[in-house]
Image (cartoon, rainbow, N blue to C red; front, side):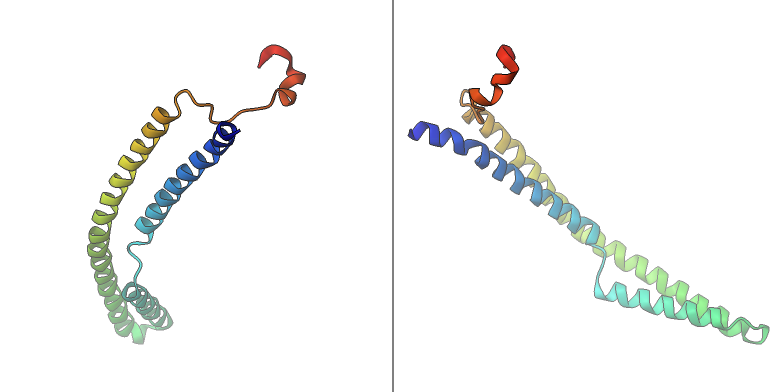
Length: 138
C-alpha cells in the first residue's frame, strides 16, 4: 500500500518542480523586458510628450522659433532618455543573464536527477478498466 501511494504522488511532485522552474523562467523574462522602465524614465517621457504637444500648438509662422526650440528640447530629452535606458538596461540585464544561466543549469540538473531517480519507476499509471475499451493495444 505504501509503494502504491508513493507511486501515485510521483507525478504531482514532478509537475510541481517543473512548474516552479517554468515560473522562475517567466519571471526572469518579465524582469528583462521591464528592466528599462523607471520613474525617471516615465517622467522624461511625460516631459517629452508635453514639449511636443506645446510645439504642435505653436503652428503659426510667427511662433516657428518657439516651436523649433521646444522640438530641440524634446529631442535632447529623448537622447537623455535613451542614455538612461541603455545604462540601466546594461546593469540589470547582466545580472538577469547570470540568473538565467543559473536557472538553465538548475533545470538541466533537476531533469537529469528526475530521469535517474525515476528511471524504472512508473510516474503515472492508468487503470486497466479505463483502457479496456481499446483492447490489447495498450
